[in-house]
Length: 519
Image (cartoon, rainbow, N blue to C red; front, side, top):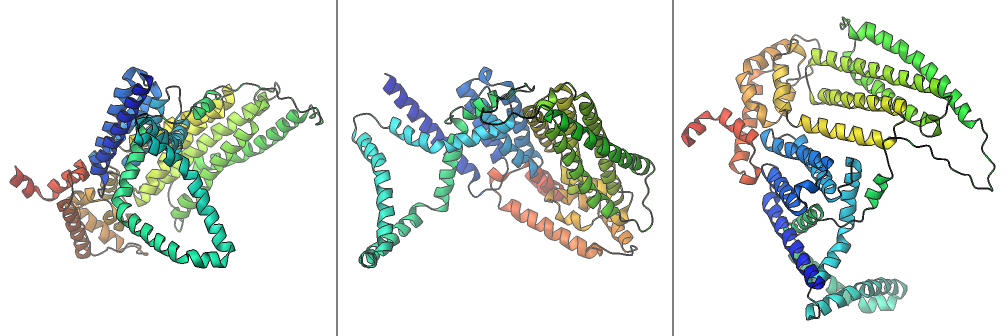
């Protein structure tokens, strides 16, 4: 009975994996991302919940599934780039968290997902053996196939070595090898087509998402981690000389000297920024706002990241439990707080640049990054104050990043950026060329506000330095029409798997007469 049960289970697993791979192939082969992505995510989620049960899913798995579902849905709603990326990242994390209930963090879940795929080949070999009935010709053939793999590989290696070492043997076998290689090449061309390789990828992907193959090594690693630090006493080998008793205190004093100096230095920088950037900021004549924001922002962000690394280094071990480290801890907390003020100053620099030059993806990216930096500084503050571990920082900040990036998928950023820039208070500094670089979703918005674009062109003509290409309304309209025609041609050849609501909204806004005919 156990053998029959294992055989039935192996058959069922193989059939489900093949069916899901076939569906994946029908949804994605030769297709762009559209409604196919949320449909596949829904299929994987439904199968996992059916197989494992809803009550068996941990709370992290449920949150990951929710975030993945939102990102997958936003792929259809907005058709943005970040939505499918977050869907893929979330799916890998969700499936690993579902298969391993005790997992708590996304980084360890992603590692477990990778381990699952690394263990898949061995599991596939074992699965084929379980699927073949006992005491059958197929079972015997499969056993001999497994036994012959290693001898055949050894034969190929020694055959090649003998060919290199013996010219006459190489001459004797050259014709045979040429014919054999031609036959193998012809077979590969016929069997291993692009579609076949894609289906194999689909099969591997589906099997790795649906079933658990890897051992619990990653889970055991995470179980050894905790949010709070514990003091570990390590004995040095008896053949090594003992460490000096004042080593920890010397490190504390060096750390205090460093933190006093950098706190004073950062206090001066923050005082200047608060007085200059926070209140009543104006752009002086001849002042390079681009250098002020680009080079200055990157340098300050790097300084914040370096500060985080220094604090982590100072509190990497027993300094967290040293009774005389109270002063060092307070200085570190002050430095973290000052870096939070610096992050706000960097945000205001970016905000002033947006107020002058308008909105763009890189400027949005800086804001998102600064939000994550602030979260990191808050958790670093808690780590130093409450003796938290690096695992705590990794777990909390990864979940925060996942939640924030999933939240970004709910916004149509292309349309939002264009709307902000069209009504910007400084029309002569808006990048008009960037309008044409946006996705097709902004086409109706640009056609409806073409007069505002032409006003911005006119203002650009009065600038001393002209840094945009499209300054003629007719040329801009021609480029806009070409973009619209390319969009209509793409939709005409689109398959149902590639459908998105964003494209449908854009088409009906551009061609309202087509909607009336359909109605």
